[in-house]
Each structure stands twice: as structure tokens, then as C-alpha cells.
Amino acid sequence: MSPLTAIITGASEGLGKSFAIELAGRNINLMLVALPSSSLPELASFIRKNFSVKVNYLETDLTRTESYLEIFDYLQEQDITAHLLINNAGLGNWSWFEEKSAAFYKMQIELNVVTPVLLTRLFLAQADSAVTSYILNVGSLGGLFLVPKKQVYGATKSFIRYFTKCLQLELYGSNVKISLLSPGGINTKPELLVMNNTLKGISKATILEPEQVARIAIDGLLQGKKEIIPGIINRLLVLLNSLLPASVKDMIIKRRLNTILES
Ligand SMILES: NC(=O)c1ccc[n+]([C@@H]2O[C@H](COP(=O)([O-])OP(=O)(O)OC[C@H]3O[C@@H](n4cnc5c(N)ncnc54)[C@H](OP(=O)(O)O)[C@@H]3O)[C@@H](O)[C@H]2O)c1
Image 1 (cartoon, rainbow, N blue to C red):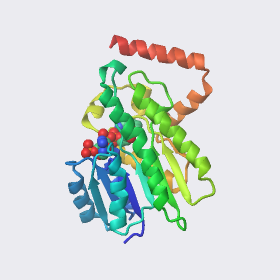
Image 2 (image 1 turned 180 degrees about the vertical axis):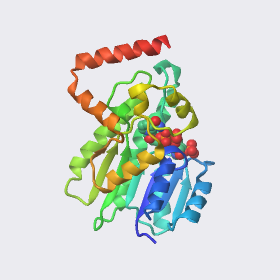
Image 3 (image 1 turned 90 degrees about the horizontal axis):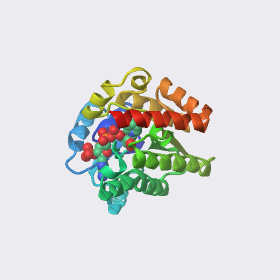
């Protein structure tokens, strides 16, 4: 059995579930975390049956401060040191700012910002400095581009971008590798699949399947890549974004806003 263990947040569905299966296939033990009454018990037994890895799981609401300590207390009780942390759990939105409640934004900021920061802090405190440890922070291309109707979500992902890039500088020369995953759209749930199927041309070409993203992300993480942008079209869009003057980008965003207003 592998001596390595990975913590994956938001592991019951979507990209988190794909990370779990990808890591199990690479013989890495798992500590899965998702909300209570999620499908974690079924996923854990599926992985135990099909792979030779140890699977632990904890059903807890990561917007509760106590949940961070619960994860590491649980690992300590089992005498497990975690070598990988995947900060994946996140809450999106596609809505005008006034359409969501204050309580929604509080929860979104807690899950997308507070949780990864505090889990990273606790993960580093227990990391074994004699072996390489890995952190993968799941950001989004939404953290780089201004996207109307994704105002708070995009801002949380910009935070993750800054946080990860700063930590990379602070941890330079240490035995910790930290990567930022910046995906475009991913077909993680039926409603996204339906929406993504209506896209055409370049927009459609930016969409990937969760299994593809998980494989590319884990390859990049283990190779110590600083930023992982799955998909050639997505990488070209990022390059274009760095080359275009701000005035042209403003014009494109205003046009995009008009399209959304008319739809
Ligand atoms: N999908 C995309 O197009 C896309 C694009 C770029 C980046 N991303 C990023 O990729 C990550 C995964 O996205 P996804 O689409 O796979 O999400 P998803 O399908 O909605 O899955 C979210 C996961 O997080 C868990 N979760 C939600 N709230 C939680 C809480 N309070 N406490 C503990 N666990 C909680 C869910 O558990 P339950 O099953 O129990 O609810 C589920 O396992 C996110 O960070 C997202 O921002 C996604």
C-alpha cells in the first residue's frame, strides 16, 4: 500500500470525484471530504473495491470553522500524515449581484476563500519536511478574466490566484510544491452540461471533461508546475489576455455584457 495520503475537499461530485479516482489509480491513499449526506460512502466503497488504496472520509460542512480542525484531528487519530492537499470545494454563481442573498455570498466567500487558506495553514503545520508535500489550489480562468454575472465567484478565484502565487514565492526552496489549477468550463454536472452544449466555436472548445482536467492537473502538480491551464484553447486565451491592451478588453467585455442583457 502507498505511503502517501491526499486530502481532497469537495470529493463527492464533479472535479473532486475525478481527483479521487485519478489519485487512487496512482496508488495514493485518500482522505475525502464533502457535505453530510453526500455520496462519499458509496464513492469510498467503489474505490476500495477497484483500487489498492486506503480510503477515509469525513462528511462535514467546510464553512464551519471547526470542520478544519476535525479533518486534521481525524487524521492524527488514525496516525496519518497528509502529503497532498487538494483545495477543490467551491461554490459558483451565474447571476446578477442583486439576485443572490447576503447569506449566499457569505457562504461562497467562506467556502472559496477562508476554507483553502485555513486548510493550507493546518496542512503545512503537519507536513513532514523530510518528504515532498504538494498543494493544488483549484482556481478558475474566471479569476483572470472579468466575467459579468460571476462577480463574487471571480473575485474569490482572483484571491486564490494571488494567495497561491505568493505562497509559491514564500515556499521557494522548501519541500512543498504548490500549484494553481486554472480551468475553463468543465462538464461537472447536468445543468453545466446542458448550458455548455449550447455553446459554439471557441467557447465550446474551452470546455473539458472532469476526468481530463483531473489527469492534467495531477500530472502538473507532481511535476511541480506553478500554474496548470488545461486545454490548448484556454492557454491561448490567457496568452491573448496578456497581450491585448486594457481598452480592447473593456470593449470585448461591454459587448459580452450587451449579449447577456439581450438574452
Ligand atoms: N465546473 C466548472 O465549470 C468549473 C470551472 C472552473 C473551476 N471550477 C472549480 O472547480 C472546483 C470543483 O467544481 P465542481 O464543478 O466540480 O463543483 P461541484 O460539482 O458543485 O462539487 C462541489 C463539491 O464540493 C462539495 N461542497 C459544496 N459545499 C460544501 C461545503 N460547505 N462543505 C463541504 N463540501 C462542500 C460538494 O459536496 P456535496 O456533493 O455534498 O454537495 C461537492 O463534493 C470548484 O472550486 C470550482 O470553482 C469549476
